[in-house]
Every structure is written in C-alpha cells, then in structure tokens.
Length: 185
Image 1 (cartoon, rainbow, N blue to C red):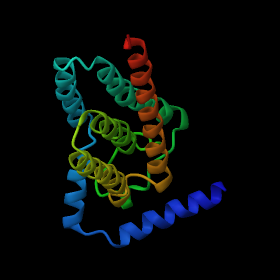
Image 2 (cartoon, helix red, strand yellow):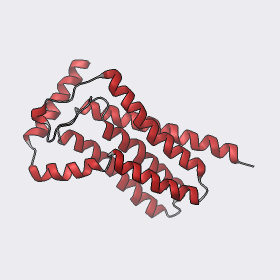
Image 3 (cartoon, rainbow, N blue to C red):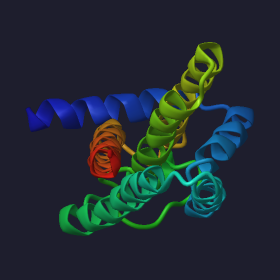
Image 4 (tube, one colour):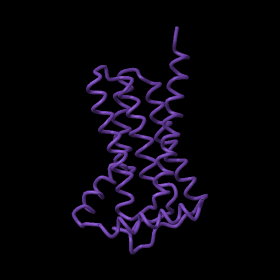
C-alpha cells in the first residue's frame, strides 16, 4: 500500500510539474496565501469580534477549537512524522519544514470548513448559504490543489491535511453542540 501511495505521489508531482505555467504559478501562490497563518489569523479575529458582539460564544469557541486545534495538531504531526518535502527542483518556491500533513490544506479545511458550518447555522437565506458554502468548498479545494501545483507537497500530504482539518471541524461542531445543550433552559 505504501508503495502505491508513494508511486501516486510522484506521478501527480511530475505530471503537474510538466504542465506548470508561470502565470498559473503566480495565481496559485495567491490562492495558497488564503490559508496563511497571518491571513487566517486576521479572519479569525474579525469573525470572533462579530460572534462576540452577537453573543454567539459557543460558535466562537468552536471556531477557535477547529482552527487552532487543527493548526496545533498539524505542527505536532509534522514534527513526529518528519516527512521531507518534494525535491527542490519541483518546487515553484522553496518551502521549509516538513511536509506531512500539509499545513495549508489542514488550516483551509479546519477554518473554512468551520465557516461553512457557521454559515449553515447562522445565515437565514438558503440561497446565500448555498452560494457561500459552494464558494468556501471551492476555496478549500483550490488551496489544496495549489499546494500540489506549486510542488511543495505530495498528494498524500494534502489528503492527510484535509482529513485532519475535517476532524477538527467535527470537533469544533461537537463543542458548539455541547455548549448549546448546556445553554438550553
């Protein structure tokens, strides 16, 4: 099984490298930055203020648990697994640190995934909820793909990051539900 995964990782890496275009590289660097720590931290701060002003403390805690829990566990797993990134010749720009799981994929799934839950629960209009959810789902997929296209991760790194982020969305939702049950009269 591991040999199949390694073979698939290399095939995807080499195929995307063969079709790489400089304009697309610039676009995907920008897409990738939508899951950077600074950008996501700013969004968490802004959404946090809105949730506090609306008295939605359970959702705020769920957002923090999902986002920071996903990021923290990702850093821990990177240090435990110590998987080396793809060779430098495949990288559109040099990334440092270990590769598995993909940090950008983890953070995108954890943060934007929890935002999907927030929108589903808090936005009354079905059409606006649906459009926002499709947009955020596309954004998560675009960020994940950008890491592959830029050659800074293997496919298995990105899939592991998406799964890890998804787990923390589930944990964040569980926190919200637990707190909402506790707040019921």
